[in-house]
Image 1 (cartoon, rainbow, N blue to C red):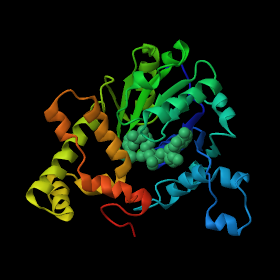
Image 2: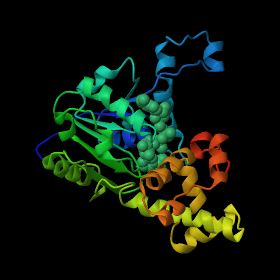
Image 3: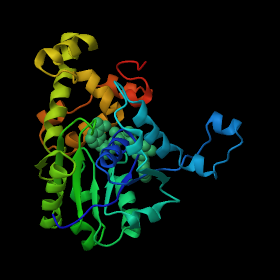
Image 4: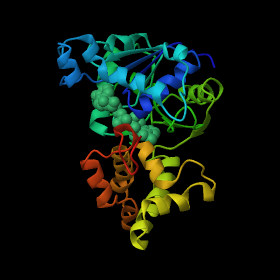
Length: 309
Ligand code: NAD
């Protein structure tokens, strides 16, 4: 392990970005956590006389990601002292932070075009040699790095953490066609020995390994629920503790993942599959799409299949 990751940057401060930043901070790595700049003031910001130019407003989304970490249930997951290693910022004013990071992790929304634009910005601001990775749930690593330089692609790979990063041990490592094998080897070891994860090497196929299987299981449970006329509580009772999954019954899992993200993840396989039977399995039922329309997208919105209290 010759390389040394002394500082990191995480792009996207949502469910995963904030959790990954906290995991890094917990092992003593200072992290920059950046998100987009809000386009509108909240009622509270207007009342305080703030404007869209105020730094506190411009960093609001990333700050909210950091603040959420201290409120997570069942108990505060992170020590405040460790979280002080996280510096928040935004994707317009603080891109120069990327030049200071040894590892840049992208954890923005699961959308190929958005991710590609982010990597264009990363390429313009990173130091040559910096490792860049995506936390995508299943978008192609090769497609995301199309248009980037050979030097960038050599240092680019997928590092797929699972939700919540604090508790779930798996870390999938996904090289692209051009990733330097030495970088892959280093990240496998770094994941194991520094981050405390169990690393698994994956091919760049839709949804890699765990999500390909996990999404299949979730889809079958949802489709069987509809076919048998069962309720959400009944399915969770059948797919949770009784089958040895203390916390991960079907609909509770979907609320933790985020229904919007889930739809993208299921579509990743459906859109790439040439097999009609497989396409049918990964077809998201319309009632889930309607929930996404209404923004009942799970824990992060306070309302999903279950209401957060
Ligand atoms: P999320 O919706 O909670 O957060 C996404 C964040 O990205 C938001 O804060 C949003 O403002 C920000 N964002 C959007 N465009 C941006 C841009 N151009 N620059 C910077 N930030 C931007 O999503 P999430 O659940 O944290 O997922 C993030 C990534 O991690 C996705 O690729 C997802 O597939 C993957 N992932 C999710 C889970 C899960 O269980 N939710 C698990 C593993 C991997």
